[in-house]
Length: 92
Image 1 (cartoon, rainbow, N blue to C red):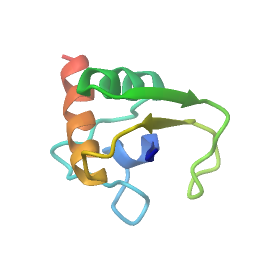
Image 2 (cartoon, rainbow, N blue to C red; image 1 turned 45 degrees about the horizontal axis):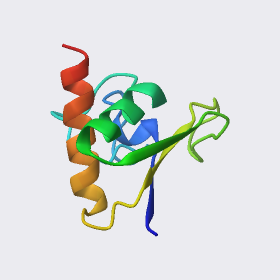
Image 3 (cartoon, rainbow, N blue to C red; image 1 turned 180 degrees about the horizontal axis):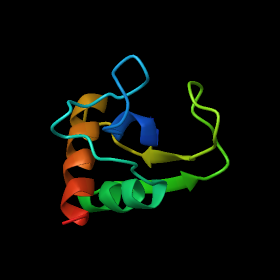
Image 4 (cartoon, helix red, strand yellow; image 1 turned 30 degrees about the vertical axis):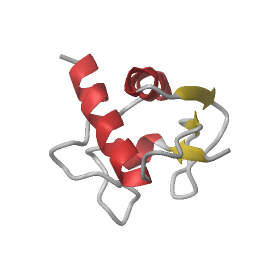
């Protein structure tokens, strides 16, 4: 069973690549929440588990993280791109 971890920092437009952003600036959104990410993961077709008490290693405030279950058929970058696009669509 493959478990991917998506931190809000990976999709945050306010961060640079060296600060933890993993998607391009045009796909990134400002201040993504774990609830938005989990909803987007479910829209993509995977199960999501939210862990709210976790803190990204490069940040001080806990924003949580989302575990993506059984995503063997997608690479991490493909998964992040699809989730970022859905989070942007949810905000429209």
